Length: 305
Image (cartoon, rainbow, N blue to C red; front, side, top):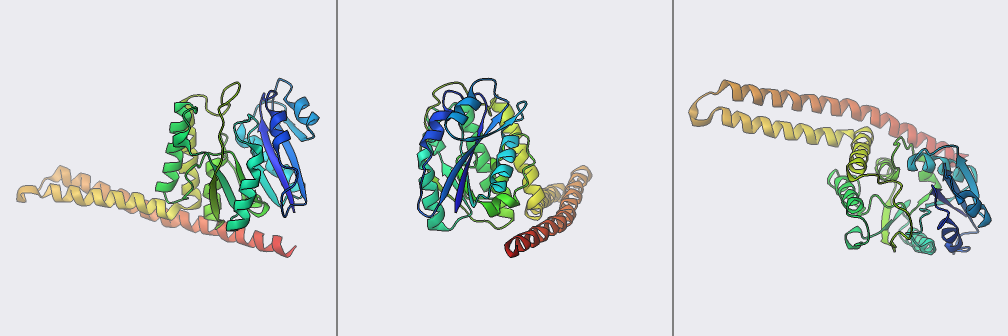
């Protein structure tokens, strides 16, 4: 079996060599381990350092962002015959040697995706904005019933090539949440394991520009993806909220045994909106089901070939 580590990098000349050097060269059950660095428009010596460390390098002519770098790396890994893929940041905050922990957990649980849990609550060295954004994103996914993973923003993860072939990352910001949502939608199993998360030795986060920017982009990706891949349960939730509101407003409209027309009108509008959410959910679920069926057919053909 072949493991390929994909490492997005933008101006990480001070750490990329160390990260590559720490990647295990052998693991039980794996016959080949390779690394691919995706240079996302770096202007320093990142490319030279990566090549000197023995990695294959693929470069973007300009900075396209983390999601684009992931798509480039995923395509290259699959084309190189990967059976298992690891994503790892180039800034040195994760210990590349702990790839062995993810591999051990994948073999133990037979999961298709293993996420390295940074235990964000305990990371006092992580900037408050990053910590808040990570906690909110993970909580949002759990509340929406998408995943039990507690660190949904972690960039240190291992997944099967089969899951990789199923991914259609559309975000321009990050791939982490979208991967979890699609894995859940297509029936892949996810697990997580605690990993070390070190203070950043140099520079600053390339993903989190401001707290507001990160939260808005991440929440937008989560909402869009969940409604795209698991729409019925989300529209049912919205419909239920509207119907409960309609019921409460109706009861209030008849308070003191007197009919209040304006309040009842608002209750009626709530009920109409709730009904529309229900209808939209059924229609959207039909399209989502077609996508899932097409996906299953693709997987079946892939297994046969």
